[in-house]
Length: 168
Image (tube, rainbow, N blue to C red; front, side, top):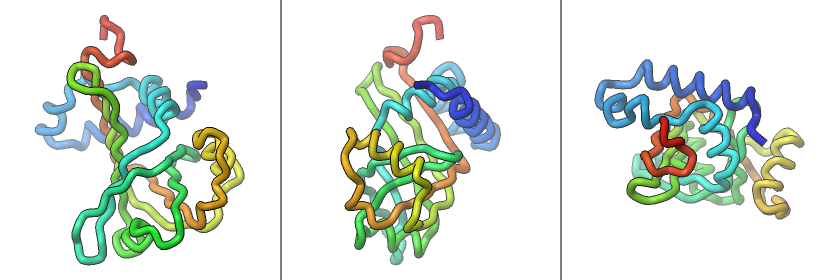
């Protein structure tokens, strides 16, 4: 199910992100611990939920778990009417997503952020992809969607993470 175009895009996005990152970030995420484009695509296709972080009108942080899909070089998040993240994104049009798994020497993480917008209509492909990711469940409850176009993406995979070969 690994899409070569998705893998290439994610790989390019990550390389650009690290090339513009500060030394502290590059040190914390050394090249040998970063996922490759194909690993990123596989990991993100397999993960269903992310922690979405936004900023409230008064500047306080807000974080909540969310279903997500990727389509057309963006992350799409179905959202309920009245959800805090809708008004947050309208006030501060930016989201950060954290997708994590594992513990200690088997953990992996993808962190991404970028401008976001509230949309009420999504492409049919987004709807169907997200329904599949939602175990085939209907998304009738999604009255709005957030589309985040990532500007930065960082990954880390510890030595024992199952997606890393021992020769990495």
